[in-house]
Image (cartoon, rainbow, N blue to C red; front, top):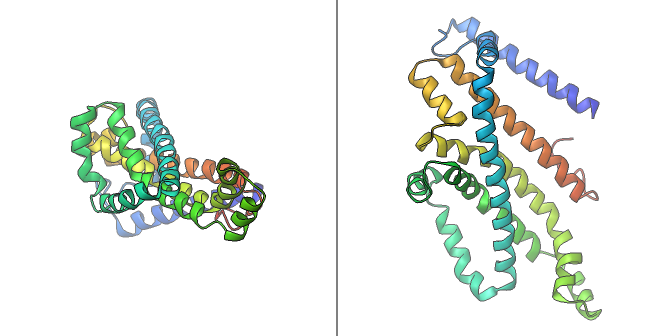
Length: 253
């Protein structure tokens, strides 16, 4: 654990140094690419307002992630156990991915309003498909020998799902969750860009309109920090769910 923390600190310090070196060497003006020191100053000076907007965006991301994961797992189970339903649903899910998430934002604003609900829906929609497909692939690719043995021993459909299919699907589902936690902030911020009165996306729009680029970068730093923390949290949680395959189910080791 200590090695991971040290590696993360060294990596962040290296990126900040490269950032500072790039801005200094190219003599970039602050309104194009501010220095790390300017961004750090903005983080400190506007910490209260950033905390307010960050709390709103974080709640949207967390609720959207929970909704998207629950919906994805539910649809994956429906695809597995209701084959006729699945034959019609799966093509619809695939076709839905041809519609950019950004294009759905105005429609969701119209249906759900400019409050929390539309942003949560955006985050959930953004991660719904990868969670569904990863969970479905894991469930249906369970080794046939295990299923045959369970049937021979008289296991019920629920017991087969709980003790055989679900553990077999967890490694692939873990990969889908790691993808989902990175995508969810995109959906939430896009929703705030289209229409909102609070959140980091709203704050970035206002900073950009006033050419307060250091404030814009400060919001980006906070958003990136959120994404990293959420990823580490999900990575840790999935490793607890799949302790028998720690190295193959995690890239953060």
